Length: 154
Image (cartoon, rainbow, N blue to C red; front, side, top):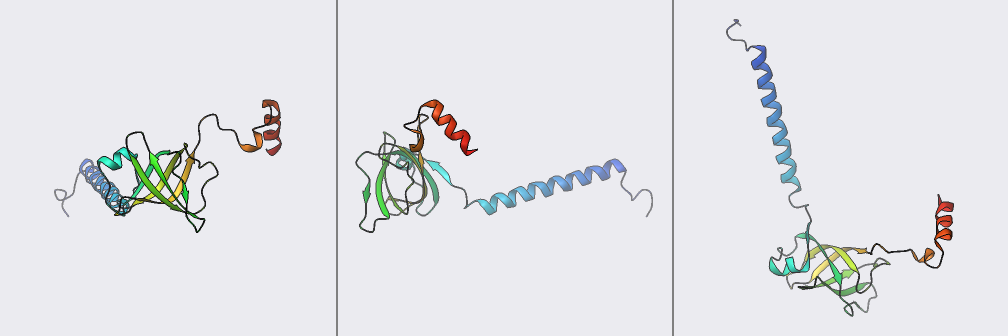
């Protein structure tokens, strides 16, 4: 090759940076395309009422379990309940063991999908508690006794 056909070092670096940037953008687009169906969007009942996701799409529903809405099926592991946010209500069906903090009037986050009939089919439930939560084992203890019990477990 002649000296004229070679790239100057400055231009070689520029070409390498352009190739690296192109590869990085390509990898990011490939990752986003591969994960497009794995994303789980968070909805509250009023969001689902206003703009329901397509049936079968993985979503996360959050809200309050309405009082008097928990019904256990005859099989003992399927429960139906209503999640509300003060503006809208969504019926939920869950099959499995419920968390110990799952009670009427408490917060819940459910992963699952909307069925064609409008029922949310939950695959997992996460019960939320308020900031004043105390485990059952520590409820009847004084603050000093609770600290001592916690220190023993470490």
